[in-house]
Every structure is written in structure tokens, then in C-alpha cells.
View 1 (spheres, rainbow, N blue to C red):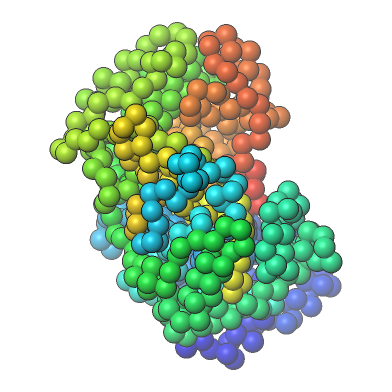
View 2: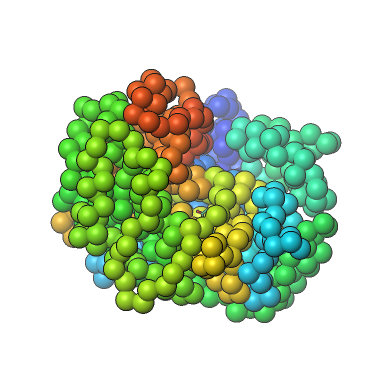
Length: 590
Ligand code: GLY
């Protein structure tokens, strides 16, 4: 049960201003005076770039600190994972939370093995393949589909964090839920990023009263630094701390979720109580492929993340991509066209393999990738007509059409290494920024179902990633653990919709092939190609490659590329943090 004495003794556990060093000594002293001694010590902690024993890297300092506190209290990586996720859902509600889904890669130091857990949302049992089509069978406009109840899948994150905690956690469940419950009760400071995103999404957020009431103050987006309390979320967490995930998947919270979805004005959905009651997490074999002297392990179907990253690495490996040529257009031609070929396979073959046959092994077999890598031998961009899916070997073939899913970036990634050597690499999402924009019991509901293809067939062939009842929408999330000599070497991942794949693949190339430091690799400008147009990161040296890449035959687009790469490198000398400067993250460790 939640320890109420402890709850109140740890009040004001985390203060963002103190963490960021933006308050006076007097006020930090006041904050320190108001908490228990062990917590007061932690308030003095500054973010780190390296550590000896354990480390947490997440997209927001409150979340990293919550995980750090748990590790310091003797918890392990899974204990810390629960605290980080529940805190992210509070302080970065636009990106992930208990109303969404997640994938967890876990290295268990005792077993010496990597495993993966699929906490992806599922399509409700009442969802039909034409969920995202109008009466004429045409796909709905993206925003018409996203905002409201139609896009809400059965949330998986709560089951994921609970079930993996029950299996691996050391500290009591209530103890690891506690930090987020306290912070929700006491309030946290609204960050610049949250303020900006509310401002940008004002019209959509204002469509639903409970969402509007939470994110606006006197009609204006919550200002930076405003201390935002979320008693409804605290109450949900207290229920869950005391009664476990049934307090979420059954009873009042479940009823509220269903009501919110089914009565969403203008765009109701079909999520029902039985979908919530029957939700289950799936432990899956990770997808592991070799690259240079490493083994790169990631999340298999229903994510396309690991397979597509592995294809990019495998297709580029025969080419001598030197680190000193990181600014050369030819280097990015090879990476960009490898990515386009991988995305062609992704569009044709990748989806929830529990529902559609998938050539999972064939897509990353050495012979297949060798055969496809020959296409990169030229000196100019592949003509679009040649960027087509290949013919990987598979046991159970099926004619499929290329998919048409639209994915916009949101999501969050965090990495944790504990003192026992366990490693967590977790990517977590409610899909679009602020998900479906529906809010209940202090958390936002996902719009993950719009990760499905809106069309079901093309030219008479079914699309692998079409909507089906109970199916999990295809993801691009690519939480990764890299092994070297049988031991974990790197945990990494990123948000960014389908650009996640490019962010993770190029960071792996930079670290594993070019031997860049982790932070340098994360700082490196992004150049991402998925479907032909080369996206070049605005305000960086990537812009200088615009003309050379155009000469090679690419269309280009200079834009913000908001990755959120958060990683930890594990070296004989200790742990090294990688924190994406494009977000608000921090590393804490000791
Ligand atoms: N919704 C983001 C992803 O799953 O890729």
C-alpha cells in the first residue's frame, strides 16, 4: 500500500528550478529544508555526463531525477523505469503516458540475455478495417481521424510497467509509483517545450473541455514556470499503487476512458470495457543483427523499428563510410538510398506479425541484404522507379500492397543502467503530440490507431498494416541495446515518428562505425531520407549539403528535425550519457 507518511515526508521532492540551478541559494535551501534528508541530498545533484555505478537519461529532468532517486534507494533498472515513465506522463504529457503504449528492451544481467516487451496499443474488438474511411470508402483527412475517440487504441503502458515490474522489480510497486504521485500532487514547473507545444496546438486542445481546462490558464497556454498540479493523475496513481493495474483496466478509470472515447464530440470511438479488461503485454524475441563487431538488438513486429534500422546498417556496411567523410554528399547518398530501400520493404511487409505473415528473418538475412546493397553502387540517387520492395525469403508468402500510413512525430525515449548491470531501453508514446487530445483522470489518451494504414487494399491486394480488431498498429519505435563481446555496450532510441528509424540508424553508424563519442553522435546534424525527399536539419551544416544532394538527384527539404536521442554507453571506465540537445532531457547518475 502507498505509505502516506512517506508520501507527505517527501513532499516537494523535485524542484526543476533547483535541478537547473535557476533559483537563489536561499530558495534552494528552503526547498531542501522541506524534504526528508535523503531527498535533500538528491536535490543538490546536478545533471551528469558520466557515472560509475548507475544512470538514467530521459527527456525531462523531473523524469530522470525520479528514476535516479529510485536507483539511489536501492531499486533496479525496472524499478526506475516505472518511476521515469509515470513522471514523463505528468511532465511531458504530450509525448507519452499511461494513456498510450510502449516498447521495452531489457538486458537482464543475471540471465545475461536481452528480451523485449510489447506494450503497444491494440485496435478495439469493434474496430473494422474501414475505421478511417468515409462513406465512399475514401481515407479520412488525417486530423479528422486523429482528434477524438476514433483513433484511441487500448492503452498498453500501464500493463507493461506493472507486469515487467512484477517480474523483475526489487522495490515494492507502491514505492516506484510514489515519486510521480507526489509530483502530481505537489506540482511541477511547466517547461518551455510544453508551453510551446500547447501554444501550437491551441485549437485542437480547446475542442474538449477537460483538456482545455488542464492546459490553459485564463484562456492562455500554461506559461513557462507555472506550477502545474494534477490531482486527478495523483489520484489515478494512488489507486494503481494500492490496487495494481486493475484500478486502471477495470472499474472507474476504465469506465471513464470508455465514456470519454465513445462520447467524444464529432468523432466518437469504439473502445470498450472488454478491450481494456483483456489487454495483455507480449514478451517477444528481440531482432538482433550483427554490424561491425557488434550485435544490434531492437524491437521486432509490430514495430518496424529494429528491422528497418538493421536493413539500413546491413545495406551500408559493405561501403566504406569514413567518419571524416561525414559531411560528404556521397556518404549520405549511400545512407539515404539504403534508407529508401529499407522503407520500401517496410511499407510492403511490416505490420503486426500476429495478424499478417511477415518475412521477419528474410528481411534481415545476410544474403538478402548483400543482394540489395548492390543497388547502392552508383554515384547518383536511385531513380524513384528503382526504389521498390525486394523479395525476401519467407515461410508463408502472401501478396501485399504498399501501405499508406501517416505518422507525425511525438513520443519519448529513455535509457537506464543500474548498479547490477541491468539495462532498460524504452520508447514510449501516445502517438501524435497530445495524442487524441482527449483527457480523463489526469492523462491524455493516445491516437495510436492512426499508425494503421487508412486504406485496406490497393490494386486488389491487402495492405499488411490495415486495421483489424485486436491488432497492434505498426510502429517505427526503435529502442535498441547494442552488445559487444556478449555484454551490453549501448542503450539508445528516439522519438520522431517514422524518422525515428533514421535518427537511430545514423547515430549507430556514427558511434559503432565512425567511433564518435555518444554525445557527439547525438549532436551531429540530422539528414533523413525515408521516401525520396532528403530532410536536412535546419540551422546546421546539413544545410550545406542541399546543393550537392540536389545534384545527385534528390529533392531536399530544410526543416527542424526534433529527435530525442537519449542513450547510455557502457564502457570499462563507466557509463557515458548521451542527451539530445533538441529536447529538454538530462542525465542523472552516480
Ligand atoms: N506512434 C509512433 C510510433 O509508434 O512509431
